[in-house]
Image 1 (cartoon, rainbow, N blue to C red):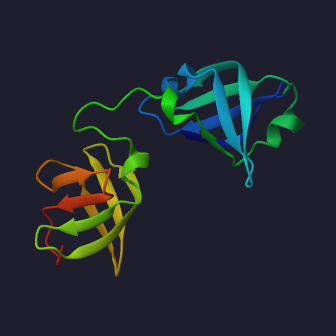
Image 2 (image 1 turned 120 degrees about the vertical axis):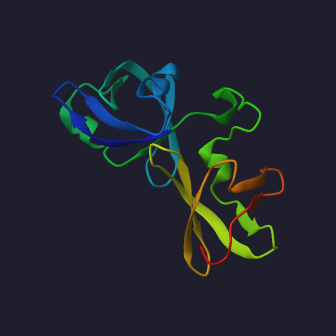
Length: 159
């Protein structure tokens, strides 16, 4: 859902780069899970607000800059069952990452490594024998089957 990029101020606030559609979307969840490189730990929000495209947040028990600096670089998540159900033909990026990508001719391109937001449309970064950038648009995406882990594309091998 996001990544903590830096402490903010001197009262225990952190600056978060949200991966949500809107920055405020992350603030809809009063409890976040923070990764420390080994495990995930629950953190209750004591406060939060948007600041442009970033989120400023403070966790319960975090009241100074030194403690806030300890969160730098950590990933932020919320439990999957708290997220709203995706609408038909809509997908969470997390569900697309890792899917096998095969074109209509049956040629396997690799797996979705990540997704880029370009403004015009999202772009799948597919890593296999080489990296391919495939726009996530109706003309290029033939079928998405999260259950079987397969994404079928209308994409020529030479692109």
